[in-house]
Image 1 (cartoon, rainbow, N blue to C red):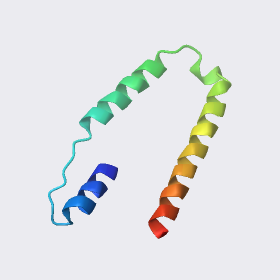
Image 2: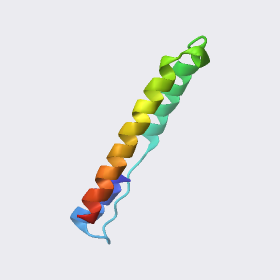
Image 3: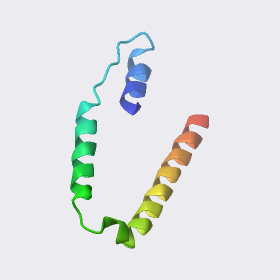
Image 4: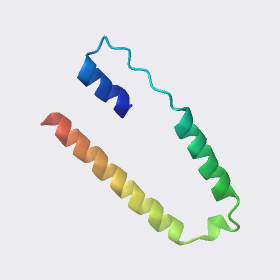
Amino acid sequence: AIRKSNCYHLNGHNADCQFSNSLYMIIFGVIQIFFSLIPDFNNMSWLSTVAAIMSGFYSTIGLGLGIARVI
């Protein structure tokens, strides 16, 4: 979505901005398979901490992008 948005801003809204997401889906699938092979993955206490930190980063990025858009 970001690449498509940048393409439209650079080339105008009539430009043909098509991008493939296949590589990202394959990488996501490989990561999911890797994590499914970890024994007792649901008992890892650090996982909740990592998830909370990632959520905070995503929220901060979204907030920053929203503020930048308004400015």
